[in-house]
Image 1: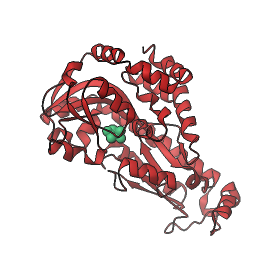
Image 2: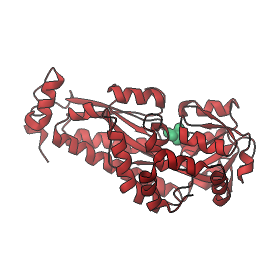
Image 3: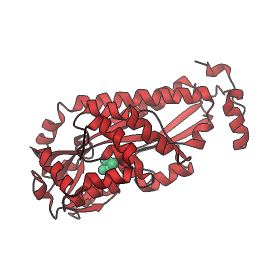
Image 4: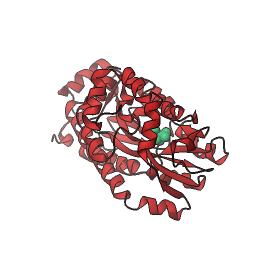
Length: 343
Ligand code: X2X
Protein backbone atom coordinates (compact mmCIF):
# COMPACT_ATOMS: atom_id res chain seq x y z
CA UNK A 1 0.00 0.00 0.00
CA UNK A 2 1.32 3.47 -0.91
CA UNK A 3 2.75 5.35 2.04
CA UNK A 4 0.67 8.53 2.04
CA UNK A 5 3.28 10.39 4.12
CA UNK A 6 5.59 10.34 1.05
CA UNK A 7 3.00 11.79 -1.21
CA UNK A 8 1.61 15.26 -1.48
CA UNK A 9 -1.78 15.86 -3.06
CA UNK A 10 -1.59 18.86 -5.38
CA UNK A 11 -4.67 20.86 -4.35
CA UNK A 12 -6.77 21.62 -7.41
CA UNK A 13 -9.53 24.17 -7.82
CA UNK A 14 -11.61 22.47 -10.48
CA UNK A 15 -13.20 19.06 -10.86
CA UNK A 16 -11.39 18.59 -14.16
CA UNK A 17 -7.96 18.97 -12.58
CA UNK A 18 -9.10 16.86 -9.63
CA UNK A 19 -10.08 14.22 -12.15
CA UNK A 20 -6.57 14.37 -13.56
CA UNK A 21 -5.20 14.08 -10.06
CA UNK A 22 -7.51 11.14 -9.47
CA UNK A 23 -5.80 9.25 -12.25
CA UNK A 24 -2.95 8.83 -9.80
CA UNK A 25 -0.94 11.80 -11.01
CA UNK A 26 -1.83 13.57 -7.78
CA UNK A 27 0.07 13.10 -4.56
CA UNK A 28 -1.17 13.14 -0.97
CA UNK A 29 -0.63 15.59 1.81
CA UNK A 30 0.65 14.20 5.04
CA UNK A 31 -1.26 16.95 6.91
CA UNK A 32 -3.41 14.98 9.34
CA UNK A 33 -5.25 18.08 10.59
CA UNK A 34 -6.63 19.06 7.15
CA UNK A 35 -8.11 16.17 5.22
CA UNK A 36 -7.69 16.22 1.44
CA UNK A 37 -11.07 14.50 1.16
CA UNK A 38 -13.92 14.82 3.64
CA UNK A 39 -16.77 12.39 2.90
CA UNK A 40 -20.24 12.31 4.50
CA UNK A 41 -21.80 8.90 5.19
CA UNK A 42 -25.51 8.98 6.14
CA UNK A 43 -27.92 6.29 7.31
CA UNK A 44 -31.23 6.03 9.15
CA UNK A 45 -30.16 3.65 11.90
CA UNK A 46 -29.67 4.45 15.59
CA UNK A 47 -26.16 5.39 16.74
CA UNK A 48 -25.96 2.14 18.74
CA UNK A 49 -26.94 -0.12 15.79
CA UNK A 50 -24.06 -2.42 14.72
CA UNK A 51 -23.92 -0.63 11.36
CA UNK A 52 -22.89 2.63 13.05
CA UNK A 53 -20.49 0.91 15.44
CA UNK A 54 -18.73 -0.67 12.46
CA UNK A 55 -18.97 2.55 10.41
CA UNK A 56 -17.07 4.47 13.08
CA UNK A 57 -14.38 1.76 13.05
CA UNK A 58 -14.29 1.98 9.26
CA UNK A 59 -13.85 5.78 9.30
CA UNK A 60 -11.01 5.49 11.81
CA UNK A 61 -9.23 2.79 9.80
CA UNK A 62 -9.49 4.77 6.55
CA UNK A 63 -8.22 7.96 8.22
CA UNK A 64 -5.26 6.04 9.69
CA UNK A 65 -4.36 4.22 6.48
CA UNK A 66 -4.47 7.44 4.44
CA UNK A 67 -2.58 9.35 7.11
CA UNK A 68 -5.53 11.70 7.57
CA UNK A 69 -6.04 12.39 3.87
CA UNK A 70 -9.52 10.85 3.80
CA UNK A 71 -11.91 11.59 6.65
CA UNK A 72 -15.41 10.11 6.70
CA UNK A 73 -18.06 11.73 8.89
CA UNK A 74 -20.80 9.27 9.97
CA UNK A 75 -24.34 10.72 10.27
CA UNK A 76 -26.72 8.14 11.86
CA UNK A 77 -30.46 8.40 12.70
CA UNK A 78 -31.45 10.36 9.57
CA UNK A 79 -29.53 13.39 10.93
CA UNK A 80 -29.14 14.82 7.40
CA UNK A 81 -32.80 14.26 6.49
CA UNK A 82 -35.37 11.56 5.81
CA UNK A 83 -34.49 8.61 3.59
CA UNK A 84 -36.16 10.15 0.57
CA UNK A 85 -34.42 13.53 1.24
CA UNK A 86 -31.04 11.87 1.74
CA UNK A 87 -31.46 9.88 -1.48
CA UNK A 88 -31.74 13.21 -3.31
CA UNK A 89 -28.63 14.47 -1.48
CA UNK A 90 -26.48 11.45 -2.40
CA UNK A 91 -27.60 11.82 -6.01
CA UNK A 92 -26.53 15.49 -6.00
CA UNK A 93 -23.27 14.84 -4.13
CA UNK A 94 -24.26 16.81 -1.03
CA UNK A 95 -23.88 13.45 0.72
CA UNK A 96 -21.13 11.09 -0.49
CA UNK A 97 -22.25 7.71 0.88
CA UNK A 98 -25.69 6.51 1.99
CA UNK A 99 -26.81 3.14 3.33
CA UNK A 100 -30.25 2.60 1.83
CA UNK A 101 -32.52 -0.41 1.73
CA UNK A 102 -33.57 -1.65 -1.72
CA UNK A 103 -37.19 -1.38 -0.56
CA UNK A 104 -36.79 2.43 -0.51
CA UNK A 105 -34.22 2.73 -3.33
CA UNK A 106 -36.99 1.12 -5.38
CA UNK A 107 -38.69 4.53 -5.49
CA UNK A 108 -35.83 5.60 -7.82
CA UNK A 109 -34.75 2.25 -9.36
CA UNK A 110 -37.80 -0.08 -9.19
CA UNK A 111 -35.83 -3.15 -10.31
CA UNK A 112 -33.64 -3.19 -7.15
CA UNK A 113 -36.62 -4.29 -5.08
CA UNK A 114 -36.27 -7.83 -6.41
CA UNK A 115 -34.33 -8.86 -3.29
CA UNK A 116 -37.36 -7.86 -1.18
CA UNK A 117 -39.95 -10.17 -2.75
CA UNK A 118 -42.12 -11.52 0.08
CA UNK A 119 -40.94 -14.84 1.58
CA UNK A 120 -38.33 -15.25 -1.20
CA UNK A 121 -35.46 -16.22 1.14
CA UNK A 122 -35.89 -18.69 3.96
CA UNK A 123 -32.45 -18.31 5.56
CA UNK A 124 -29.13 -16.44 5.39
CA UNK A 125 -27.48 -19.13 3.22
CA UNK A 126 -29.94 -18.21 0.49
CA UNK A 127 -29.64 -14.47 1.21
CA UNK A 128 -25.87 -14.17 0.92
CA UNK A 129 -25.59 -16.68 -1.94
CA UNK A 130 -27.96 -14.39 -3.86
CA UNK A 131 -26.73 -10.98 -2.75
CA UNK A 132 -23.01 -11.80 -2.93
CA UNK A 133 -23.75 -13.69 -6.15
CA UNK A 134 -25.61 -13.07 -9.38
CA UNK A 135 -28.67 -11.32 -7.91
CA UNK A 136 -26.48 -8.74 -6.15
CA UNK A 137 -24.47 -8.25 -9.35
CA UNK A 138 -27.71 -7.71 -11.27
CA UNK A 139 -28.96 -5.13 -8.78
CA UNK A 140 -25.62 -3.26 -8.72
CA UNK A 141 -25.73 -3.03 -12.50
CA UNK A 142 -29.22 -1.55 -12.28
CA UNK A 143 -27.99 1.04 -9.75
CA UNK A 144 -25.02 1.91 -12.00
CA UNK A 145 -27.45 2.77 -14.82
CA UNK A 146 -28.45 5.85 -12.80
CA UNK A 147 -24.88 7.16 -13.51
CA UNK A 148 -25.11 9.39 -10.41
CA UNK A 149 -24.89 6.44 -8.02
CA UNK A 150 -22.98 3.21 -7.60
CA UNK A 151 -23.23 0.46 -4.96
CA UNK A 152 -20.28 -1.02 -3.12
CA UNK A 153 -19.94 -4.80 -3.52
CA UNK A 154 -21.26 -5.98 -0.16
CA UNK A 155 -24.68 -5.21 1.34
CA UNK A 156 -25.12 -4.39 5.01
CA UNK A 157 -27.63 -6.65 6.74
CA UNK A 158 -30.92 -5.32 8.09
CA UNK A 159 -32.54 -8.64 8.80
CA UNK A 160 -35.77 -10.58 8.28
CA UNK A 161 -38.65 -8.19 8.79
CA UNK A 162 -41.17 -9.10 11.52
CA UNK A 163 -44.46 -7.43 12.46
CA UNK A 164 -45.06 -5.58 15.73
CA UNK A 165 -48.35 -4.10 16.96
CA UNK A 166 -49.88 -2.41 19.99
CA UNK A 167 -53.33 -3.96 19.48
CA UNK A 168 -53.23 -7.67 18.56
CA UNK A 169 -50.79 -10.37 17.47
CA UNK A 170 -50.52 -11.33 13.78
CA UNK A 171 -50.66 -15.14 13.71
CA UNK A 172 -52.34 -15.68 10.34
CA UNK A 173 -52.96 -13.49 7.25
CA UNK A 174 -56.54 -12.69 8.31
CA UNK A 175 -55.16 -10.90 11.41
CA UNK A 176 -53.74 -8.23 9.09
CA UNK A 177 -57.11 -7.27 7.57
CA UNK A 178 -57.71 -3.56 8.17
CA UNK A 179 -54.60 -3.23 10.37
CA UNK A 180 -53.11 0.30 10.31
CA UNK A 181 -49.46 -0.51 9.73
CA UNK A 182 -46.53 1.82 9.09
CA UNK A 183 -44.42 0.70 6.16
CA UNK A 184 -41.33 2.40 4.66
CA UNK A 185 -41.82 4.58 1.57
CA UNK A 186 -41.59 1.44 -0.53
CA UNK A 187 -43.69 0.15 -3.44
CA UNK A 188 -42.93 -3.50 -2.74
CA UNK A 189 -43.54 -3.41 1.03
CA UNK A 190 -46.72 -1.41 0.45
CA UNK A 191 -47.88 -4.05 -2.06
CA UNK A 192 -47.34 -6.94 0.36
CA UNK A 193 -49.59 -5.44 3.02
CA UNK A 194 -52.20 -4.36 0.49
CA UNK A 195 -52.27 -7.98 -0.68
CA UNK A 196 -53.08 -8.91 2.94
CA UNK A 197 -55.89 -6.31 2.92
CA UNK A 198 -54.13 -4.34 5.67
CA UNK A 199 -54.17 -0.52 5.79
CA UNK A 200 -50.47 0.34 5.21
CA UNK A 201 -49.20 3.94 5.57
CA UNK A 202 -45.78 5.10 4.28
CA UNK A 203 -43.78 6.92 6.97
CA UNK A 204 -40.02 7.56 7.01
CA UNK A 205 -38.24 5.60 9.71
CA UNK A 206 -37.29 8.76 11.66
CA UNK A 207 -40.99 9.28 12.45
CA UNK A 208 -41.90 5.65 13.27
CA UNK A 209 -41.50 5.78 17.06
CA UNK A 210 -43.75 8.85 17.42
CA UNK A 211 -46.31 7.46 14.94
CA UNK A 212 -46.60 4.33 17.09
CA UNK A 213 -46.57 6.30 20.36
CA UNK A 214 -49.43 8.57 19.22
CA UNK A 215 -51.31 5.59 17.72
CA UNK A 216 -51.36 7.16 14.25
CA UNK A 217 -50.60 3.56 13.31
CA UNK A 218 -51.04 0.43 15.44
CA UNK A 219 -48.04 -1.44 14.13
CA UNK A 220 -44.95 -1.54 11.95
CA UNK A 221 -42.66 -4.14 10.45
CA UNK A 222 -38.89 -4.27 10.82
CA UNK A 223 -36.15 -6.73 11.81
CA UNK A 224 -35.71 -7.56 15.50
CA UNK A 225 -32.43 -5.62 15.72
CA UNK A 226 -34.33 -2.45 14.80
CA UNK A 227 -37.23 -3.21 17.14
CA UNK A 228 -34.52 -3.38 19.81
CA UNK A 229 -32.08 -0.60 18.81
CA UNK A 230 -34.88 1.92 18.04
CA UNK A 231 -36.63 0.95 21.31
CA UNK A 232 -39.90 0.22 19.49
CA UNK A 233 -40.72 -2.25 22.27
CA UNK A 234 -41.54 0.81 24.40
CA UNK A 235 -44.56 1.56 22.17
CA UNK A 236 -45.47 -1.93 20.95
CA UNK A 237 -46.96 -4.97 22.73
CA UNK A 238 -46.92 -7.86 20.25
CA UNK A 239 -44.15 -9.09 17.96
CA UNK A 240 -45.13 -11.68 15.36
CA UNK A 241 -42.18 -13.41 13.71
CA UNK A 242 -43.59 -13.14 10.18
CA UNK A 243 -40.11 -12.92 8.58
CA UNK A 244 -41.98 -11.76 5.49
CA UNK A 245 -39.02 -10.04 3.77
CA UNK A 246 -35.25 -10.21 4.12
CA UNK A 247 -33.88 -6.69 4.01
CA UNK A 248 -30.43 -5.16 3.72
CA UNK A 249 -28.83 -1.83 2.91
CA UNK A 250 -26.87 -1.05 -0.24
CA UNK A 251 -23.83 1.13 0.55
CA UNK A 252 -24.47 3.74 -2.11
CA UNK A 253 -21.76 6.14 -3.30
CA UNK A 254 -22.02 9.33 -5.31
CA UNK A 255 -20.13 8.50 -8.50
CA UNK A 256 -18.52 11.93 -8.93
CA UNK A 257 -17.44 12.17 -5.28
CA UNK A 258 -15.77 8.76 -5.48
CA UNK A 259 -14.11 9.50 -8.83
CA UNK A 260 -12.28 12.40 -7.20
CA UNK A 261 -10.34 9.91 -5.07
CA UNK A 262 -7.10 8.54 -6.56
CA UNK A 263 -7.42 4.89 -7.53
CA UNK A 264 -5.35 3.59 -4.61
CA UNK A 265 -7.44 5.64 -2.15
CA UNK A 266 -10.60 4.20 -3.67
CA UNK A 267 -9.13 0.75 -3.02
CA UNK A 268 -8.50 1.65 0.64
CA UNK A 269 -12.08 2.89 1.05
CA UNK A 270 -13.52 -0.21 -0.62
CA UNK A 271 -11.40 -2.50 1.55
CA UNK A 272 -12.59 -0.93 4.78
CA UNK A 273 -16.23 -0.68 3.66
CA UNK A 274 -16.16 -4.43 2.93
CA UNK A 275 -14.57 -5.13 6.33
CA UNK A 276 -17.19 -3.02 8.13
CA UNK A 277 -20.05 -4.72 6.29
CA UNK A 278 -18.76 -8.22 6.99
CA UNK A 279 -18.25 -7.31 10.64
CA UNK A 280 -21.79 -5.94 10.87
CA UNK A 281 -23.24 -9.07 9.28
CA UNK A 282 -21.42 -11.14 11.93
CA UNK A 283 -22.66 -8.81 14.69
CA UNK A 284 -26.29 -9.28 13.63
CA UNK A 285 -25.83 -13.04 13.34
CA UNK A 286 -24.36 -13.14 16.87
CA UNK A 287 -27.35 -11.14 18.19
CA UNK A 288 -29.89 -13.69 16.86
CA UNK A 289 -29.24 -15.99 19.80
CA UNK A 290 -30.21 -13.47 22.44
CA UNK A 291 -32.37 -10.79 20.87
CA UNK A 292 -35.71 -12.61 21.35
CA UNK A 293 -35.04 -13.01 25.08
CA UNK A 294 -33.92 -9.37 25.27
CA UNK A 295 -37.21 -8.22 23.70
CA UNK A 296 -39.28 -10.53 25.93
CA UNK A 297 -37.53 -8.99 28.96
CA UNK A 298 -38.57 -5.57 27.59
CA UNK A 299 -42.21 -6.72 27.70
CA UNK A 300 -42.87 -7.71 24.07
CA UNK A 301 -45.05 -10.80 23.53
CA UNK A 302 -43.33 -12.78 20.74
CA UNK A 303 -45.17 -15.33 18.58
CA UNK A 304 -44.05 -17.61 15.76
CA UNK A 305 -46.14 -17.70 12.59
CA UNK A 306 -46.68 -20.20 9.75
CA UNK A 307 -45.15 -18.69 6.53
CA UNK A 308 -47.05 -21.03 4.18
CA UNK A 309 -50.43 -19.43 4.95
CA UNK A 310 -49.01 -15.95 4.25
CA UNK A 311 -47.36 -17.15 1.02
CA UNK A 312 -50.63 -18.72 -0.18
CA UNK A 313 -52.48 -15.47 0.47
CA UNK A 314 -49.90 -13.55 -1.60
CA UNK A 315 -50.21 -16.11 -4.40
CA UNK A 316 -54.00 -15.87 -4.45
CA UNK A 317 -53.70 -12.07 -4.60
CA UNK A 318 -51.44 -12.43 -7.69
CA UNK A 319 -48.65 -10.70 -5.77
CA UNK A 320 -45.90 -12.98 -7.21
CA UNK A 321 -47.32 -12.87 -10.76
CA UNK A 322 -47.53 -9.07 -10.64
CA UNK A 323 -43.93 -8.61 -9.45
CA UNK A 324 -42.64 -11.27 -11.87
CA UNK A 325 -44.13 -9.19 -14.67
CA UNK A 326 -42.66 -5.93 -13.28
CA UNK A 327 -39.14 -7.37 -12.87
CA UNK A 328 -39.18 -9.40 -16.09
CA UNK A 329 -38.37 -13.05 -16.81
CA UNK A 330 -34.58 -12.67 -16.82
CA UNK A 331 -34.34 -11.01 -13.39
CA UNK A 332 -37.00 -13.31 -11.95
CA UNK A 333 -35.00 -16.33 -13.12
CA UNK A 334 -31.93 -14.99 -11.29
CA UNK A 335 -34.01 -14.62 -8.12
CA UNK A 336 -35.51 -18.12 -8.38
CA UNK A 337 -32.04 -19.56 -8.91
CA UNK A 338 -31.56 -18.83 -5.20
CA UNK A 339 -35.10 -18.76 -3.76
CA UNK A 340 -36.59 -21.71 -5.62
CA UNK A 341 -39.89 -21.48 -7.50
CA UNK A 342 -42.01 -18.68 -6.05
CA UNK A 343 -45.31 -18.88 -7.90
O1 X2X B 1 -37.51 2.27 7.20
C1 X2X B 1 -37.38 1.10 7.60
O2 X2X B 1 -38.31 0.36 7.98
C2 X2X B 1 -35.98 0.51 7.58
C3 X2X B 1 -35.15 1.18 8.64
O3 X2X B 1 -36.02 -0.89 7.80
C4 X2X B 1 -35.44 0.75 6.23
O4 X2X B 1 -34.52 1.52 6.06
C5 X2X B 1 -36.11 0.06 5.13
